[in-house]
Length: 362
Image (cartoon, rainbow, N blue to C red; front, side, top):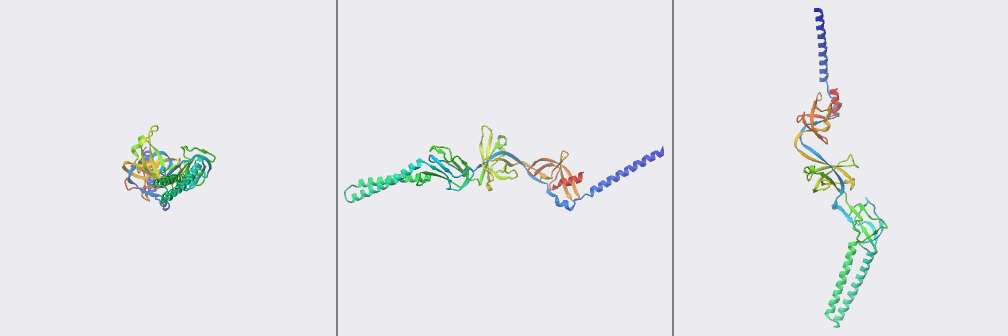
């Protein structure tokens, strides 16, 4: 019996010694972990620091031309469209011919011009004759004054017709030439050769606009109205350029609600270099604003989600790297706001941290 007890004790002692040896080997192996020079070059470190908690409001809108840089061209006369020399989307220069209209009204203006010029000549001859007769004592001063008045009336009518020609841009023909009022793109075109135009046509035939600077008109839900302020920076994304962000700012808040959608419009102004943004494009607008308060912030890329928890790799030295659980409040773009688990000034690995995580926790 004593021999059996001694044997059991010896066996238990051997198991304990083996177990301690394994723990010692594991501890020594863990202590021996060190980042190689290659890995040190591949990782990036970021400091945990206190930052204001920011949030984001996402709006839906569309691109539109700056209304202050858009001119609608209306037909000033009726007639038959002989030619339309530009197409929708063309870039035009100020004064460039857009269309030619053959018009009976223009022909009538030309007739009025010729008649007014003739009446001025006749009135001037009558005045000269009246003055000569007055010098010869063959008529009175009253007749001279009447002749002068006729000259003034005839000249006034001629000036009126000339002003009409200037306003309409008419020349010595029966054609009315439609010209571009500014440099810009043809945003709309409602005219084609052979079309008959009425003089009382209330629809524009061309719209020319400059789109080097454009607007984004976005809708704000009623519940989000208090979050929107003038001057807020905005990021704009479009379907056409999914990987490109355009930047602008809120420069006008329309303080009325649409009765149907119960939303309020805001306007974001932004530069349009290269004319990438086209009027009527759909746009997604992200407005950044402060929630209030501060919190620990680190790059979102530093957070590892594993086993239903969030972890970061806290770097102290190449041989001292700690896997630490953190409580993430939220992530916004490339920033993670951490409620618990980190102290200000601690360094976390923000690039290739998964390789280190796997090496330490496998």
